[in-house]
Length: 545
Image 1 (cartoon, rainbow, N blue to C red):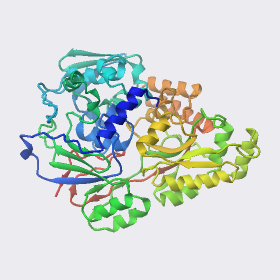
Image 2: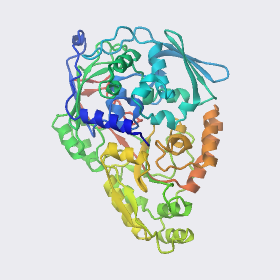
Image 3: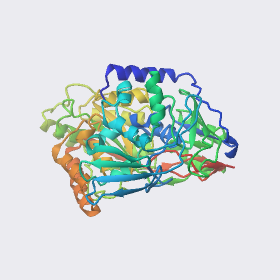
Image 4: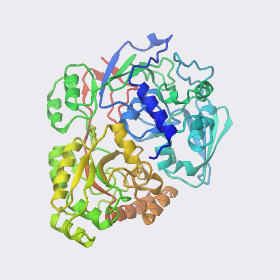
């Protein structure tokens, strides 16, 4: 994603400020109403910030979206079904283009040392939240000019033509055209509702960027302090609108990048929940009598993206050759160690509209050489290409460094030299958005249960500066993505998405590698921790013995 100098300066300043603990405390008069329990979560990395609309990774969303904020509609815990949240209900016009949300009364924004709300949540907050993303000239947006990758990747900046306050507790969204996944998309993280009153306070003080460091929401937990690469401390929100949902007074994120260290901390009860176990740690964790290991089929995909804006990766035959040269079965055995399955499609088998008839290319180094020769490279590629390896562990890629080394060796057999490159996670994503890589290891965990979240978000033309890391914009494919959004019948949408998957298989802007099983190691002291198919950790509704 290309950012101007002001944005980069604001981001650097914000993250630098987070390297020391920032006191965000508030005296909570009713904190005694929440059980005086502490839960420690061993997370895998530091969030880039606390303004959900700016980010796209699970590390960020676990730390901000599902702790501090709410949305108009939300996914049920442990599922992808949408349920009312800050909106009690909504109506859709007969032509499918106008959505009217009826807001919940009595919802309070969090009280902190730096902000004391004078009113409850209302329509002004919803209008501010979306106008900030829609209007480049909106005053807060001009004062803090950041990018909104999810919002633009899904084309919502073009889809939503108007957001209106009908009355203090009613908001009307007018769309340019029918959009089948609109309600599912409104439950996503970017749509977290901000306080317009707090934003106005920051704007007047000349501190708009503080919204990314000192967040205020309506959510179950209040951010107290953050020490980058060390800890995040939250307290339960005594005024949370959902009665009984906050069952722990102290929630602590212990930032622990090394998965082996996370395992040891869990076993020693230094944390009660951990993220992303390595495949080799799954059996020992299952054998531990103090630990539960729930699992579900992964709603995810690990893949190698090809930056088609870099020659010779713009040639289909070159991408097909690189794909054909990868020994994916060997990768699944070594990297996933039994917790993965071969991927053939740009979405997982558990996603409706998945084309089960799509076949992956066979591993064939000699065939790959012939394809390179057809593309004009009979002696292999003349220049070295970069192969980026993620610095973090994810269910869709539990060991990116090992995977990169295996792919590097596979490509060398067909005359392709690849240099393995890595950066700190935030830098990795920022540079990838900017298109600096040739090829890169990345992946996706579904956000909302809709096929558009895979095909549109990862491969649509509107997403080439966002999560379309391949920078691939192919009109026959993109036309189908748009058609799928405009259709409302599931059968019709399935036919459209089946055609799109077939085009993907021919063009191969990225190489699907694997889908993995999702595990959530948790101490048996923890009550009602639900494993989330969308890949996040949520602590509302969770308690500790």
